[in-house]
Image (cartoon, rainbow, N blue to C red; front, side, top):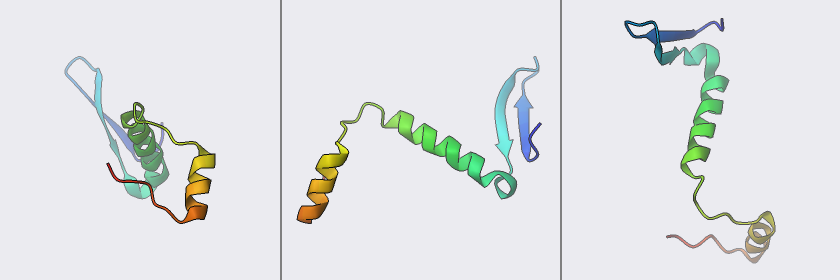
Length: 65
């Protein structure tokens, strides 16, 4: 078991939540948060790396929605 991680269980012993000690596992939380954020943005339109580079060279910002 990883130190600083505790699982909360219901009356049937099923894991329902987790408590993460951020002092001991900050990187784990960052990884989890990054993945959750990526899942939320999954359906958003993508922009190619090449178009970003071109836009940056021209000094233009991405238009706001």
